Image (tube, rainbow, N blue to C red; front, side):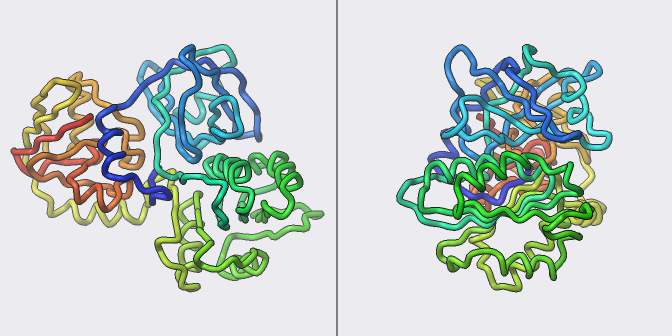
Length: 374
């Protein structure tokens, strides 16, 4: 997951988050809901210490032993802290996805699974005094964090509205289809859902086809116009869908500060560009000093390898989650030296300016690198 922050962290919040470090829970599965043929929602019981605090739009990191190896994956919360009594995440099967296939095949109600405390910045503060319009673009499982935000906004901001454009392959793949319909009826006038199907049935009365420029223009004609000052645009879904949305919003001259996105994968275009850059990178081994949990470790990182994977191979138990530079669970502050990041989308501009790095995609470029985590 990558974040263009919907709710920016202040310097004080960043320091507090870093100081506290990650927390882990062993949560019992209360219920597994079969949302579609390929998607399930996992509802967790609250731990003995009481309900876990979280913000709408955040995600959980699930940790499981798959084929003898510990696997960690991030899944957005579909539950709302204002509406739901229990934490819940939604998991959609992905072809060759290790965890996304293991969970629906093996996890059952009553079992316990280890999770990292909720985190993520694709969120916002809610207030009954606010009056705003959230325009959301979701594709497939990208509906998950949107669901958390929609339920929270409808509950907490009586004068705000949501317009949701939701793209799916076919009618059977629409996650939360019935729940969205119930919410739209209950909060009539405040939630407007526009479905778009790649493969529409004969009796389909909605829009169909790929989300291209012409369809986006038609959809915008159906969305209430509250003006730029009161409207915010959110997107979460496949890379191609979000590129198309960003293109139209740029055409409409929507300010970038009004646009926020959450990505479940690292952009493939950026990956190809980084491969070309790596050819000219310095190819030397470097020693990195890592300070974590009151201990100091010296790690020799071979050329081309990342700091986190090298430390884990040496038995150093550092915090991490996605290992793709998207979730920021492995974030640390570089007190000295130079660290090159293969992926920077998970960090805000202010975090990068303050020296924060992501160890899972960070490679040392000098021997004086000192990173403080937590």
